[in-house]
Image (cartoon, rainbow, N blue to C red; front, top):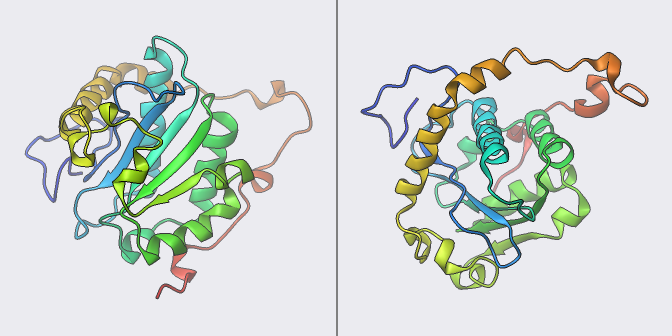
Length: 228
């Protein structure tokens, strides 16, 4: 898979660390509320959507590294979603079932709370997709999804000193930040390989058992959406 654009000059052979034509870096520094900010953005609207499950796995892999390396506890996560290259064909591969699974993991299992979501470079397509995703999101998070048609309103929540230069910030180019994280993931390859064999013993889980359908029973895809 490509690290940047259509092709990557660097060939990567690991099955544990996927590469995409997108960037998902946690940013250096924290907000004034002590929260970590993560940017998610695609790089080229003409590049096909990668395997969605692998993309979501990459997000959680970065989260796993953060849990091991954060020097101090953070007061939650803040995501900036850049929709500048989003197209209907990209979102067609995001099925409701896999979106629900990912959001359950993020909201119920991941030990750092999702506090805010900020969407920049919005469009009518983004409105449609968000309206579809919102039923899977807790009410308090739905109330913390902010749409920004101008980056000036983003600065009311995220200090410019921790934002990349591409977003009018002082933290340098986003590519450099992302490459630092890619190197970090590669360093953790042996650890990720070990995690592949770790399984939960469901017999030890307290309370009433929950089935797969209880948690994830939902079919369909974004292809069902009517997008103007």
